[in-house]
Image (cartoon, rainbow, N blue to C red):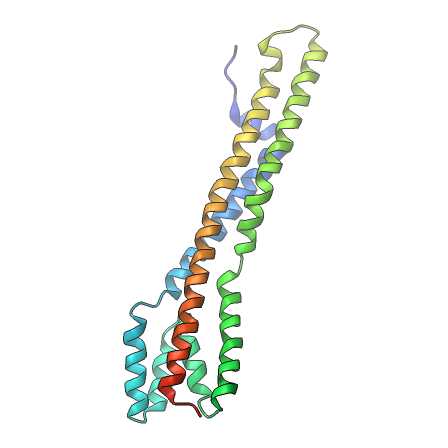
Length: 205
């Protein structure tokens, strides 16, 4: 049996081309989210809160606002937002911070739906390619009128490659999606914890 030219199979199978596009899209989104979370990570939040508390105790509200504005992280943006509305009553400020946390959550979850979608649909695209490959194999067999592995090899190869490609796209997409979903939950928990501590530190009415 002659060797299978997988590049030729890729060119002849539109489902494989779709899966290649899905793979590129998934890894592009994964890299973008990794870079976003890398910048959003705020280490030593307790030290950050202690530093802000010290400024507030010294009456340096402007310095605290300037300090939080310099740092690009969800926690820092939340603190800056709270300090910008420090004159509000505690209950109103709590509700306002809740909306800010939801805004940050939307930023954290941006594009994650793409990864979830790729993880769900890639196996079905691969299955569709498998069916098409089997159909081609039987068509080639019918046209040749002669049995043998060489006749159906191309169609079977396309079918199996499509199945493997679908899984190869879906599995990393699901793993990466679950990883970033977990990161979102961690960051949101941190925002809730430290927004409550900040309110106590500010001594809102």
